[in-house]
Image 1 (cartoon, rainbow, N blue to C red):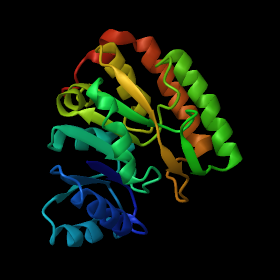
Image 2 (cartoon, one colour):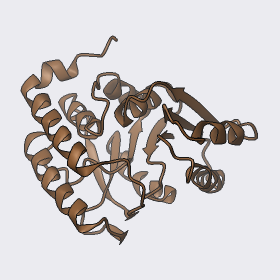
Image 3 (cartoon, rainbow, N blue to C red):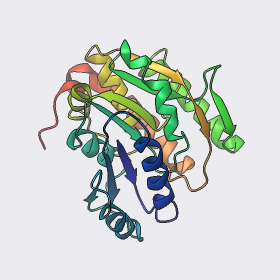
Image 4 (cartoon, rainbow, N blue to C red):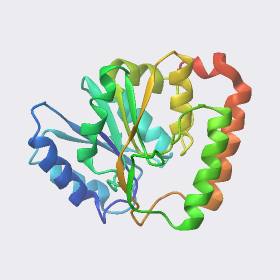
Length: 238
């Protein structure tokens, strides 16, 4: 499991405690990799202290701050395991929702949590302006990037290990656009993607700044489409 973190001192310890509590009760083995994106608060110190008592947890301190896409990419390539889940540090999608992804990966190597599906349960919605902007952006993403996928941006995605490494080793975007970039690449490579309705609850403290990040993501989307499949599939050698 990969948890990207940037200045998450206010919630990283409760998140790690909840993840440990849940995963310890499961029959499978697991590890958790926190990838800190140049955090300037006490995030790194807190995680370092936490992992001294549990070697199933690992911290990667990535400096300088490069963006969520960079640290998710690094975590998904470097962490070990037969399956690789990445989850936002706020646990907006509770860790137990992974049980809804397991049946989906019996027939597909990628399963992604989805908020707008009919069976999804939104316990606390985003502010209206964020929800409306998100819906508009998603319509454009569907049209230009991954038709048929209703929610590319939910931070709860499960990849088979070899597929994660194949896909994320080709990703290049460091910002929030990495979500749809990774799914575009997966589609281009012929991997099936299963979209799964999940339980989700908006958490305060999102690092997404709508007026800045949504337009940037849409520009990235157009660039990816213009670059075409051959460029997207080229592995990053830098």
